[in-house]
Amino acid sequence: MGRVARVTGSIAFQPASTGSEQPVERPAAQLAPLSPTTPPPAAVLPPRAPEAPAPGAVLGPHYEHCFGCGPQAPAGLRMTVVAGEGLDVTSEFTVGAAHQGGPGLAHGGLLTTAMDETLGSLNWLLHSAAVTGRLETDFVRPVPVDSVLYIHAWVTGVHGRKIYSAAEGRIGGPDGPVAIKAQALFIQVKLEHFTQHGRPEDIKKALDDPDVFKRARAFEVNP
Image (cartoon, rainbow, N blue to C red):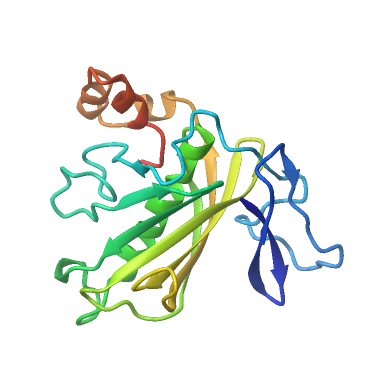
């Protein structure tokens, strides 16, 4: 994975090794207040978790009824996420007619959902259950119906229970024009976050699943 530095108001990705934890460096002359989604100077880039899926592995749905990735969500996005080499993932979202906002264009809220789903999948690489605390998006250009939004997301730092991340979505593929950018803050939580706040029948169904792996994954990313 790598470090992220501010360069004339933009985000620049800097390669880094995947060894021990590394400090997230910041320009000393930075005077502007940090956004809640920007890692603080004390944040680190932790190593990839030993339990993390292998690079190139497809991350199945963490919950079958998830609107973002679940196969049993009829109107959902049904996204597929793939683990990257470091603390990063990629995904694709095909914009259908049901996803329109303006005529022939994807709804901005659904594009944000696609970014949130992809960013949330980063928690699987850290082997940590976490939920979205804040998500900031910049819409760069419209995304037409029938196009594919290719999303790349990466961890930018971890500080205590806070996981910082960023993502960009490109039209048509990894080299296509950028359509949307995002920065996010996720908060690590315990299983009780879900069991105490979720609808009881859904929680019971997930916990009663005989597949231990599925049962664990139901609580790996944002609800």
